[in-house]
Length: 382
Image 1 (cartoon, one colour):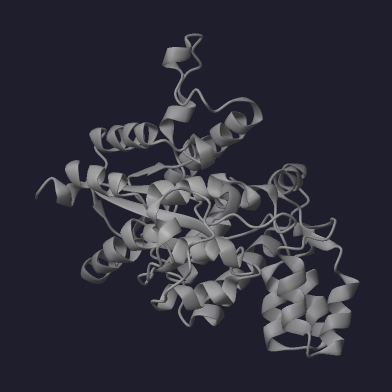
Image 2 (cartoon, rainbow, N blue to C red):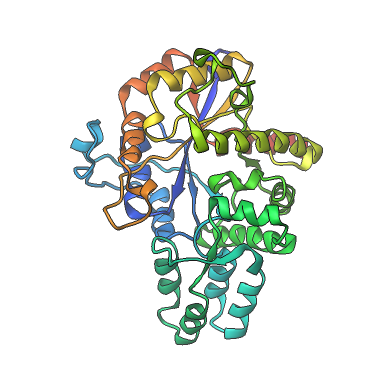
C-alpha cells in the first residue's frame, strides 16, 4: 500500500450540541470544510437538535463574529456533511433516561420511574443552565404535568467530572443505573438523529473508568456500535523523570496532568478489556492524541510531534480529539465554553498550514464511518 493509505487521521470534534456558538464553529467554518472528520454529540444538551440539523446539510453561516485571525473570520463557508457520534455523558446535566421518557410520555409515574432508574448517578447540585433549563423546559413546556414532575427534581443532576468518580469509588453507584443511562442515551441519539450511533466516545472520558467500561462495551455490542474511543496516551504513563527535557508534555502540570494520567491508565486497562470481548467487540484506532493538545496547549509543532510519534510507532489509524467552536458569551455555559481557547483550536483546524503539512506527511483524513463501516461489511464478525 502507499504511504498515504497507511497513515489515517480522524479529527473528532467533541461537545457538539453544547450551544449554538460551539456548533457553528464545528459545522460552519473553514475547519468543518478542511479538517474536521466527525463530531460527537451531547445528545441531552441544549443545542443538540440544531447540531443534528447542521450535521446533515450544507448552509452558509456568517463567521464575522469569530475573534480569531483565521480566514473563517472574513468569509462565509458552507459546511460539509459531518458524521455524528454519541458523546456519552454521565457527568454533567440531566440524565438521558429522564429526557427520553419526556419524549414518550408526560405521565407523572413514568417520569418518576425514569428518575428512579438512574437515581444513584444523581446528586443535588445548583441549577446547570447550559444543560438542564433548555433541555427540560423545551420538552415540557406544553405539558404542565411533565413540567411539575421535572420541577420536583430540578435540583438533581449528574455529579460532575470528579463527583461521579467519587461516587464510583464509594461504591454507591448501581450497575443497573449505569446500564439504564447508557442505553437511554443510545436510544435518545437514535430518536434525535434517525439512526443508531455507529461510534461512541465519552464526555470527560468517563466511559473508560474500570467500573463503567464493561457495562459500556456490553451496551455497545447490544446496539451494534462499530467503534469506540480508547483515550490511551502511553507517554503520560512514562516513568517520572527529574529532567524536565525528558518529561512528556511538560506543559501539563498539577491536578490536570494527574487527571489525564489517570485517564490514560484507565484507557490502557480498557484496551486490554476490549480485546477480551473478541470478534463482537467494537473497534478502536491504533493510536489516540489530544489530551495534551487542548485549548491554548495546541501548537502546530506539538501536534506534529504527537502525530509523528504515533505513526512512527506503527499506528495506521489515529484519532485526534479536539474541542473547537466559537466561544459562548459571558454568562452562558461554563468557563471551558467561554474560553478563547475554543476559537484558538478552531483557527488552527481551519488554517491552510495544517492541511498542507498533513499532505506533506502523507496523512489522509477520514471519518470513523469511512474506515470502520467498510471493514465491518466486508469482514462480517471477524
